Length: 290
Image (cartoon, rainbow, N blue to C red):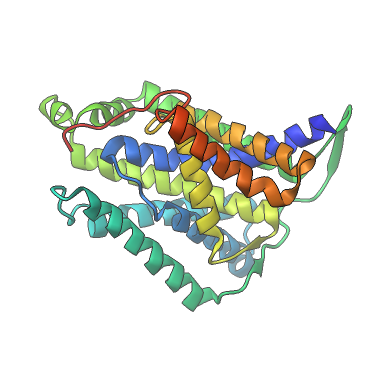
């Protein structure tokens, strides 16, 4: 029983990690809690849904479509809601991101309606028994996609020129600019990558739960923030590990304490982090000179 729950927690945690990574990248570069990230997740789910329904595409095309569309949405967000807002007022960009959240959610309600929509079966359901554990083909697919994405992102940040530029800007905007880094370009790339990952996570969530809704972004946004705080603000590795930990805790608490206490456990963790470990498990990276 415990092993089965751990597998379920791993799958849930992988979804949380993908969302939290986007939050973490944006916070690391701009020192901004980008609340609209959950709605980008929701948009990705609907893009994937309609790619499958209208175009008859497979899950891989749906993932690619959501990634491209949400990446473009991230670029639009930078141009329309980040750059025009004065950096002299720290709350201005935060309020702007809340405005984007409201706009995206209401647009989704207007276009798709306020009801849940079924996500068609895109992966043949098969069950595999590994000793005491039963794992489905859907769970395997989600885990593989999530792990591959996290590995690619880690390699990108650690081994590429743009990845080094992102880390430099996260340390200090002015110093990075003096070293020849195009800060505006780094911010744009960061938003595109973060939004693209959120779009993929949205499609995976639709596949996992077999439905999507215009309101699905809110819960995921809250969980993503908890994971970011758990792992450490601006710490990508912390977001990856923190998502897995939160997923494990939620599934185990639901199995052995009760499903009604699941969210209570999540917010209890948030309060404990803020009280006793505000820098997170892996420490916080701060941005100076924005």
